[in-house]
Amino acid sequence: MAHPALHLYVLAILLLALSFKATSTSTSTHSRRGLKSLHFTLYQQEAINKTVYLIVKGVTGPDVSPSASPFGSLFVNQDLLTISPNSSSKVVGVAEGASITSSLDGLTNIVMEKITLELKHYKGSVSVLGTAHNIKVIDLPVVGGTGDFMFVQGYIKPSLVTFENPNIVYKIEFHLYWPSYVANHFSHIDRSSTLNGV
Image (cartoon, rainbow, N blue to C red):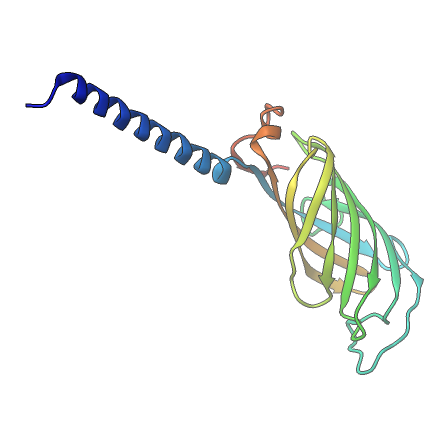
């Protein structure tokens, strides 16, 4: 029969190995699921030559479609963000930025945007920098923020709702994430939440 001390030694090594495995598994799980998130939708109210202006008209390339802008065109905007597609609905933010038509077909734009938000429990801004398409829905990366959106990551998903010249309405879906080391500093950020009453 084996020595009782040997059993204790083997048991101690086994427990140590199991606790190491449990620790490394929970760390791995934490890093995957440790992000705090916030998801909501707003509507960008744009009016040509009122809230969005063509500053530089670019060069028209071959076979440009009606929904295209000339290559090199520079637009600036300062648009209101509302809680519904109706322009008279509650205003909860402002989108200020610029876009440059960056493809010869006139459909792709480099977008730089600062979106200032005053929501029920969140105040601050998010910064967006990416490439948008005039027809296709493409995710635009959120590269940072201020106020309650400090260190935020994620993306927005803009899509056209209506275009009745000169008024344009975009639906903007926000998908925002805070790393756990930052989210712990903001007590009002839940593990994952969706804003309904914005």
